[in-house]
Length: 245
Length: 365
Image 1 (cartoon, each protein chain N blue to C red):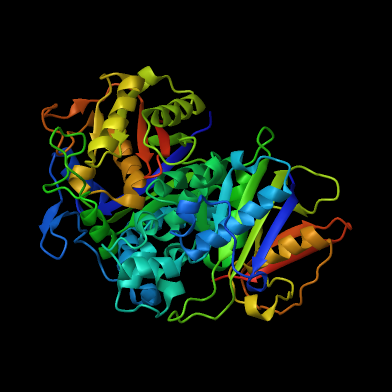
Image 2 (image 1 turned 180 degrees about the vertical axis):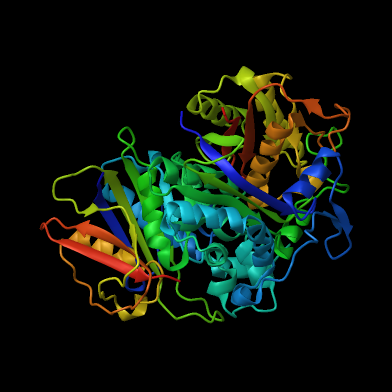
């Protein structure tokens, strides 16, 4: 079975502050930035699609979750400055907030797998589709590296994809993630996003929107890697992998 | 309906450091909850059997990692056999957890090795490193029901032939922030929590881990048959109809008539309204015929590990042919009930009102 990318939405820092209009006004100011980023691209994706995406499964991919909100939650525990975040700490806020937005009734969950978050979330989304329910939405969201965390610095990124099982004219097709014991092909990403665990999703969105790869590449050696093969509308196949862990 | 045999299982929590000891505590109707005197005074289910991680995995050290490590150490041999049988890249893992990030941020090591120790994937990586499994592996978040949703994800991986075996379960430990949040909301019980009890006044938080090894084929007495989830329409709400839909769909998917269900494991953890809603759904689905076990009175509310612990306990019920008394369920039966039926339903729900039902059955040998 193949999966086609029917629509994509991307947000990066260059796009200005996120506009999470999908969220009800009373919720908008109370949720963390990660949820606002996810709501921005999900709202944009829904506007681009003629299909009612509120009825399909939603898979959220994030490696760290909302660390910034979680930090505030820890610091302010017991003080109800952010009631919603306190009730739904850590990874729980994302789906709860998005479910509350616009009356979603498709199943939603958060997948977290470090450097493998993109293929794992794609896999989970693909497995939630079948011939009768061929659509799924997957939202990848990772905030900029929080200050104080000793990890490689990177910028924020949010990408939403509308996947549908089967072949569709002029739509790139995403193969099921495969696992291989050899290094992935060299690839490149914008420098600010090179270490963002969800950056490979940007590549998928680029394929969708442009039909050609426009990304620069950086080789990442690895003894163990995953790969996702995307067949572009031009008929050219690309393979993209990323370092584990 | 294809069932996937439960070829190994382990649980560890305040009721005991091993599956055998947890079962003995639950079977005897005892509680592992103890009074904690701190800034949040109350009864908690602390897992006292936590061992330090082996030196080789010290880079992943955290409270949560130690709890998971205690469980993995007890199930590593069956996982190794599964890796040998199916190939390590055909053995996957799905873990549910909820408050790992918060617990990590509270530690003395904030900022030190966050990704390797405290981010959700650190737990999955630890599992991979301790067992050698190399298939798809990820953590699921999304609230208390994440641990139950992990079973749905695991079954999808097996159904779609992505893996031949999968380690599924949950691990959780309540952070101080969560304890204070619960205390601030008056969600903590003043006594040991009393699931479904007439005098219930809140929950008791607990910590622990439970892991289940599902394989495509293998020797086992119990198998996983079906998992189904239901969600309230129009935003978060606690509704018995949602619980009912999840149970009905799971039984239908497993081709299990309700009258053949002999045991229910409830998530009920002492909340006045949420327990009542869950009980209402059980009553509508099964009447008063099926004995139920609510283990939170023995272990505390295990958050992301609750569903997997429920699965492990329900499997023990099916094997032992009894359903123990639920600690705190005063005024009801005082001795274990004889199990009448070959199937068990493990039910879980989240604060958003979603409900997940997992159906287990005794294998035809």
